[in-house]
Image (cartoon, rainbow, N blue to C red; front, side, top):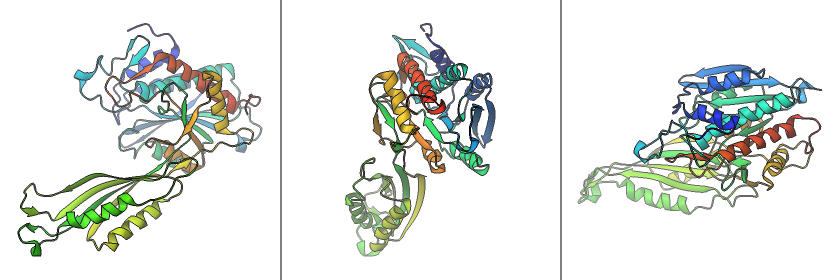
Length: 396
């Protein structure tokens, strides 16, 4: 492995060497806590069931009115997805390796590289500006890639219970496409899933008068749902997408009509809809076709958007300015892709964006990130801090 060229890369390597497969943290947060404590951050570990979470805060002590001072949050996760087939990795997934300026390892892009950039950017900022407006905080979990029930959402519940608010939040998810900073996720679609059990009556195919075929009953329902135009999207979101992800029925025999059909479906929806509208419409179609069914809904997250404003101190303007300053190119705003823990933070009133490295190799074997990209990402995060927390910044 080549010698690391920066503090960011060295910290990324230290984090990547820890096999923190969901929900394990494997000591990653302790490493981050040590660095933050040296800067004067107050660290609070929150353990919920099998998940370790970190809430860390440092006030800038340059406040005019504490009630109006911004709370800037870096949010992310230390857990990673499983490595998969080890034989397909060019280098061991938890032995971070640099080859030709590329850092390889599980979590390099998603998202330990971002965590390293956040920590080092904060170190530089606090050393340069020990006093600043508001506060810098970190919200880090070890369960983002898994069930996500004991991670960020539980921390947010705790903060809300004691009326501790986040004003602005950068989630370090890998948002970039071709070069770091070329895309900012300034919102995400909502996600709602359902498991439907359509009931029929099992029997011999040769005696249709004695059976009720749930497959036949389901086909017109799914056809209607798949062709339904939910909305046309809006300036920030594409049209809502309905997808059937699994259909299962049958006993394995060709001469038996099954007694049940189970189906899994998901909708990624815009701010034109609510989960209540979706539930009511789908259940109305099922009822219209007079099906005997059970349905279990899973509400994965509501849509959120951080709009580009014109007022002084606008968060998205500040982040866009920071990216443009470092890269020379204004970022594209996007709400595409899946969900992130931003969906738990945005409902509190926080303005949330996602900004991280390129996502081409995330969850793949040989996951990697360019070392130069992590250094650049650190510079972007540093400029975000100056834009938001310094009273005389160029943008704010």
